[in-house]
Image (cartoon, rainbow, N blue to C red; front, side):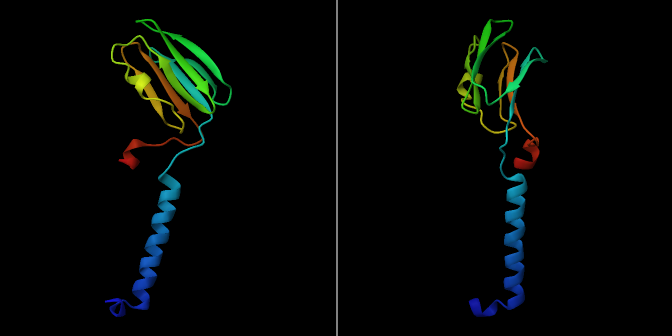
Length: 122
């Protein structure tokens, strides 16, 4: 079977592999988050550095949500919402990662140089 593949075929296969590697490097992963954007009720509440450890209380309609920034990552540690989806989201590390607490109208998003787009990833 290998004898049926000619030099031109190997060249096309090699070029395709290089192209796929290039696409993965450009769009396949994220990183480089530098800031944390915290929104309250759709408006910007705070925009802070991801590299300074701190705890931020964000008031919302149901109570106070606690956002913790530590070690280059951020998370919602406490939220008064009933289902705790944003708390279960865990640590956000890459740019474009987000945790949204809908009942309390609080969201946390990591920002960096380039935005990731879900439509290209899925």
